[in-house]
Length: 193
Image (cartoon, rainbow, N blue to C red; front, side, top):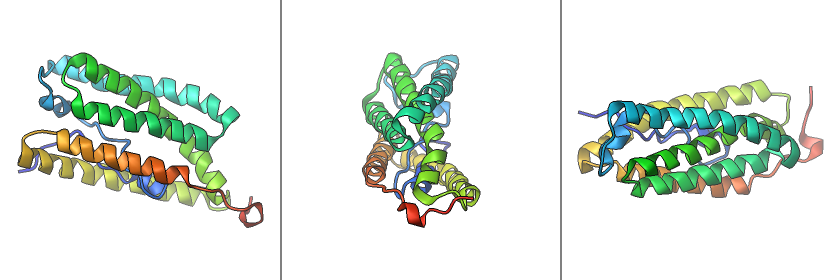
């Protein structure tokens, strides 16, 4: 039987930039079964809540930064932070390491979430912006459904989550690289409402 898993190898970023899959990676307290000192349920919940709380700070701070430095730069900054946090998660063994993962990942996630709608507008124009965002959200949902199954399977086979975390980190790094080469359409190709 498959177990629920922490790493959603998600199509959300794959849909955003043609090949990254990392943002909704941590979905449950089972994440902490792979650590040397598994925290209590309340500590596990607080670590997961840290991701959400810090993502709010990331959204506000990087939303403001995106107005100054551009959505692609803020998206890439968020991707760098999430990728680094995921590689850190592979070796995290202590609760403080998990909190530091949660803070860095949460901030990076917030930066990506706030950056991708304006980035999609820059890359594809505004004439079909709603449709494009709808497809992106569909990709997120597919990744959110498939990722836990893959991670649960890997846990069932190996007895640990490290391989799932490593796969997430590598896919995130690939997404970062591919996102960095995205180019906007030429002005003559962009249609505005």
